Amino acid sequence: MQQYVDSYYSASRNRDRAHPPLTESVECDVCVVGAGYTGLSTAIALLEQGFKVIVIEAARIGFGASGRNGGQIVNSYSRDIDVIERTAGSHAASVLGPMAFEGGRIIRERVARYGIQCDLKDGGVFAAITPRQLGHLQAQKQLWERYGNDRLELLDARRIREVVGSERYVGGLLDMSGGHIHPLNLALGEAEAVCSLGGTIHEQTPATKIERGAQPLVHTPHGQVRANFVVIAGNAYLGDLVPELAAKSMPCGTQVIATEPLSDELAHSLLPQDYCVEDCNYLLDYYRLSADKRLIYGGGVVYGARDPADIESIIRPKMLRTFPQLRQVKIDYAWTGNFLLTLSRLPQVGRLGDNIYYSQGCSGHGVTYTHLAGKVLAEALRGQAERFDVLAGLPHYPFPGGRLLRVPFTALGAAYYQLRDRLGV
Image (cartoon, rainbow, N blue to C red; front, top):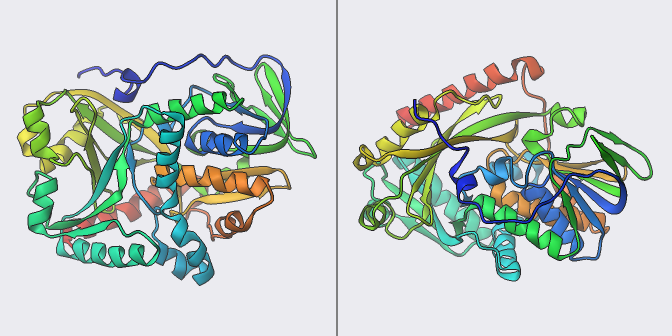
């Protein structure tokens, strides 16, 4: 079996500064636990408002889902605004609806303001495999337009072949406010922005314990941080640091491959406008071209976040169903990255006591949501909590069977929806 280097993103990362581990006792206004998108976005928003911020990271910047995902800027939440209206009420939908398109704007604003080099491209396609899925996209277009997204185009069978060189699809929805990026380089650029604003980041500094109180104390292996506020942004890599946050969520893994560089002609034939694409199946496929013309293709979910032994054997057949013309193309990289799933597929936001805040559980829709979450958390710490309170009020439930049986029960439910996808019902 071919051996792979960690991920394509690690191999093509921008050069960044060193962030040494914490080795002393320090104090700050806000200690952020986790240097992924949620933590970095929160830190930037707070630093821009004059807070003193220290970010601690157990591994390296973007080590988790922020540096391993498909690199797609996809609007809304993992469950759309109509689901929020049904489950949480019209007020929640009226607040969260316009917010559904804010994360992408925050990314673009920060890329421009801080000069982040992350191969940003505009345009994302939702591709319908069945007429039923195309009907859903038509309803989604109307829903999103009602909440302010006016950059949408419904694609018929002819039009989608102009943007995706595959025979699989009967139509689609083009969102020009979507797009794609090199996800790890976005995180590295945001970390540089944190430092430029006077913030401090410590890599290889896991939080081992949080003492709660008027000024929480965050312990690490070789130091500690005393802060007025703590923001917990570990998502699927938080472990049991805060047990109550693990009760209603489950780490999951998704797999991604990257081909060898394609010729300009072949790359153009696959994605002529260089948009990113995801299909509309329950366990969806997603793909895009990298800056050096590799096809990055991902899909599927491993519940419980196990690392499969042979990722290529899982994802390559999916890629060939979409692009059989790539049968002779080599795969240079294959990797997995964990994200945190909630039963409702909506993010979990809240506070523990008066001064420990958290956001987690993006459920596979994290690139845009995490950037929004950072802004909302910073608002709440400044006393502007209306949007935070609506997110915190979303209903959440434990997985059936508890932590012991949540994986098989969730996999059984996913198998049902996969069967529906295959049957086109």
